[in-house]
Picture: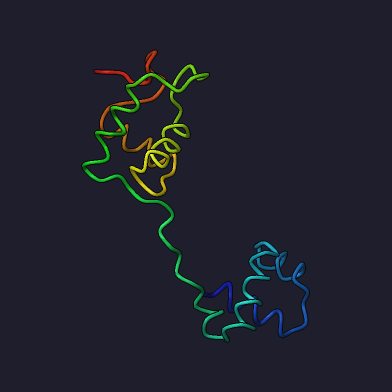
Length: 126
């Protein structure tokens, strides 16, 4: 909120987007988004910003075993092993989840003590 306030104040002083970005250590895209929000929705919306939606879904108890089984399976044709990106894409393609990041896949596998790349088929059993 403070940064957006400074953006609007510097704009009112006649500073260019480039000057404001340099002064406030932010990107010109941020300046442009703040201006657009100000003109379209008003000062309050520009100052408060929009809520950030959840970036990705997390796996629930029923989806984690599917991920573990997938990571233990043979990798896709042309691949020597499963990567976190391949696992994430496959989960979405199989309809297990609508969206998931490779970092969430990593955390789920770490929690279950599986780790792609530790053995020939993609996981280690300790």
